[in-house]
Image 1 (cartoon, rainbow, N blue to C red):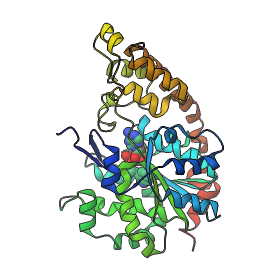
Image 2: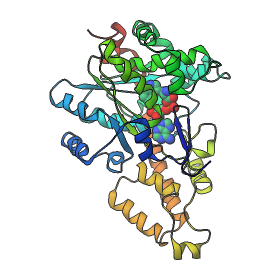
Image 3: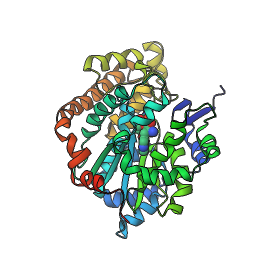
Image 4: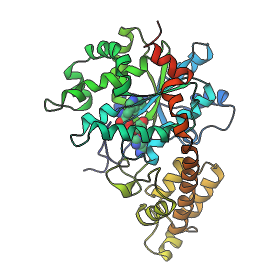
Length: 383
Ligand code: TYM
């Protein structure tokens, strides 16, 4: 593979992703300083670390979302998760960011749990498995702290009856060639997975308002299809805000993989496991010996502990600047930056575990009887 070769699809991220080129390939927009200034007028607090550091780096129609918010039309948020045995820290990224947006704008959030997608995509999984994983993943998502009255979490296999009429209208507007061209499917793909995009597009039409989708950029192909057909069904084109991928521990190419356990930190990992994974597997841009590191310093561009701190774990701008200076000039050693990261990750997981203890208690609010959830079981969409 040539150095600049990379691939980003909803199921696969390989190579060193060139995000500037991806913006051109996908036809999205950069998040500009002007847009950031607009957002900071509403956030009234420090800008989210993932916006300040350009981790959420690209968008479609974010300017229109802000316009709609300003002129009183409002908007809603939508994101989702294909359940698996365990969620890793990368999966948490869009949820943390979505919660921040909900806190600022006080809007409805819809979270789709695609147990159907997971089941249909893997011949080895049973529906019992994906449904158990859905339950466990939902407990993790609830722990993020969404507003229970303004958030609706739904499992596709359970909510499908309410979705189906509009899903069929969406499906009717998508043909095999489009699905094939967008997702690289072929005649051997099972027909469930060919139909599935209609189900992931559907929640963008829960309200007759503009929908903003926070997610990593791998999900963008779905939204391109959505934007081609939404207006013909009387809905808005969905707006998106895209993030980069938190790199795997084992190296800064691609994204973390649930099937390579040492490449990721799971929300269920014990403090000891976290420390061991980071100390042993985190790919280092530091030099091979202490002497070399002292004289040459580390290459921050390939150093995963530094990237994880930059991406999410070190919120303080002056602290990250200090780490960058000291580590790149050899004042700091690889073992030291890894220790800082392990401590930060464990801190976040400790807080997460505490909040998750309450998730079971809140479960039915988010899925069935909170204000928004109740409303969603009563009607498909307004208008
Ligand atoms: P899934 O379960 O693969 O991923 C869940 C969310 O996590 C993001 N993500 C990451 N973000 C940062 N760094 C990473 N390393 C990383 N890995 C994954 C994904 O972009 C996603 O936002 N088909 C979807 C489920 C879905 C959905 C949606 C996602 C249904 N509706 C609406 C986003 C928005 C899926 O398989 O996600």
